[in-house]
Length: 376
Image (cartoon, rainbow, N blue to C red; front, side, top):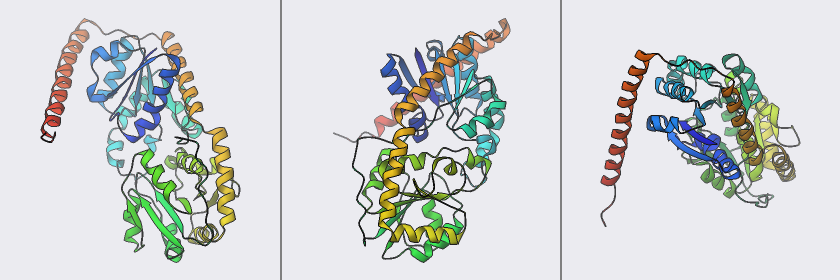
């Protein structure tokens, strides 16, 4: 099978998690081929040489056109989406842009042979907007079988807050003000650092990091405890609990808001702790995590065990395998209307213009790359 995986930025973090890493492993396993393209890099020849086109979060005229041309060439189209972007929360940084692109997003969902999603809740939300859906769950980050990190009694605990977006963390911030000090140090990765610093909290700040670099940082923190505040909304409920998967695999105990997706993933008292979004509950949970080294050890052991049973990379790869075969089956059973002569002429003109634009962009990137090469 020939797979063409596309995204707005095929080298982005989310494209790596959802597409590049599992599809590369699947291609090696099955002897298939897989190519990677950002939307603006795709050419007609790419579409005509593929059996399955995977479009991640397509929300533009360009992405929809790629779907249309792939279908007309006989390829199956899979639309990959891992968030409920039709109900994006107001505090998300790209809220306005996503809202403006909703007509294209809905059209892309409806046109595809199959929509792949990351959670059952998201699957239920997307099903009315699509022809068919398939669940491709996220997996814990795993690079090698490391021992659980030690939990040192009496040593400072490092409270870790990380996100690619801003968080609504008022009650957590209020609780942190009472515990951060010699016995509890605060570490923030990404945009949450802005809000926490604005509250006057002392913290160690880091920018957003690639997944492997972030996990390396998290493992280095002595006595680490992860904090995951999340609002109660339809958008948040459809997210994956992948943060908890990663922390659990790394042996870092987690305290999370008692809302989906974490109520679906964490067993309170066994694999983590869930708290209502109140200062009092966050404060109680933080004090236990700081004072009780046995709690930290027990949660770390049990959470890793559950994640290694239920949220593995092999399970994600197997789900992609099932989804791609289903997409091909659905495409074979589908009749796609061919454009008429006039439409074909206009399409050829558009293709020629698009090919010229792709070539121009590639030339310009190569030119800029040569300019940035340091002298020998």
